[in-house]
Image (cartoon, rainbow, N blue to C red; front, side):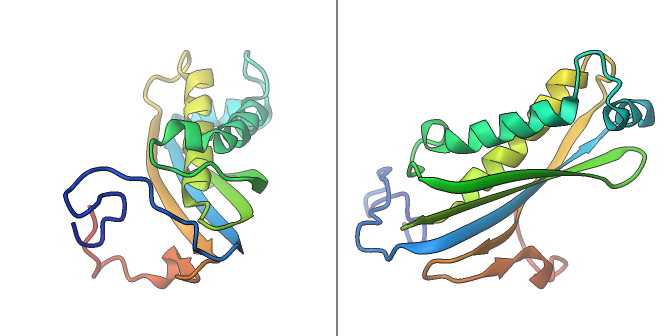
Length: 167
């Protein structure tokens, strides 16, 4: 099946054997965007939401989810995480950007952990504010950066997305 490493030559699913790979320092950064009503974002930003500090609950949820990625994604290797950090940025009056960074010293990368952290943090924000804003949209969950391992560094900012074909 070509470059699809999670399938053998007959098309059967498999966990990739990383036994012969070198242990290296690996880092991944992922992001998710949440679009919402200005009043909702203001409520989150000011900490005046009835359910408490939305961002700190979301930060904790993202960190906890990153630690469980191997349990959530069927063929993902469980990793010993060195660190997970979640940051929040108010991009406009209607847009919250969540950035998750995961690091490990291991034989395989932490992209899935960073993506899981960003996504879970976004879902947690959604869950906490859905009672006041059902129009909230989680969008653009994506890998921003990865480093370490045989394939080296990759940065989204280095891509010309206008010429790339991606699903």
